[in-house]
Amino acid sequence: MSMNFQNAGAICATIGIALGAFGAHALKESLSSNGMLDAWETAVLYHLIHAVSLFLLAAINASHPIERARLAMGLWLAGIVLFSGSLYGLALTQWSLLGPITPIGGLCFMAGWVVLALPRKA
Image (tube, rainbow, N blue to C red):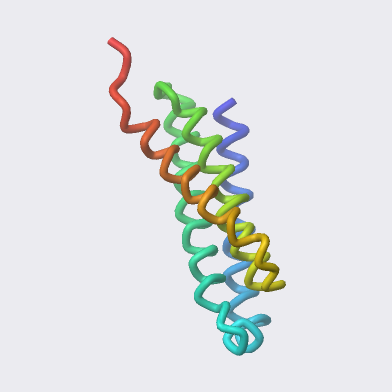
């Protein structure tokens, strides 16, 4: 299962880089004019941090299994979709219904890190 998360991390990183470039070049003027460039940049930042974390944890977990790693990776993947995805959508559409989804994604990111910090079973 770790290889699937490793692949997901690599794919998420690729998409994050593409969306960062897209925002910086193709969307910069429109996002700046509607005040959503910061939201886009925040989405890309969290997207990439967690894509790389997902990739690395999956790679480490493949050879040195870490308790609750799969749960953490699943939460980070959900965070990328919910947090970053909702910010991308909000920046592009300004559809206010996406706003309440963002904190759920943020909680997924945090929960993934907390899961890794919990004490291990003896």
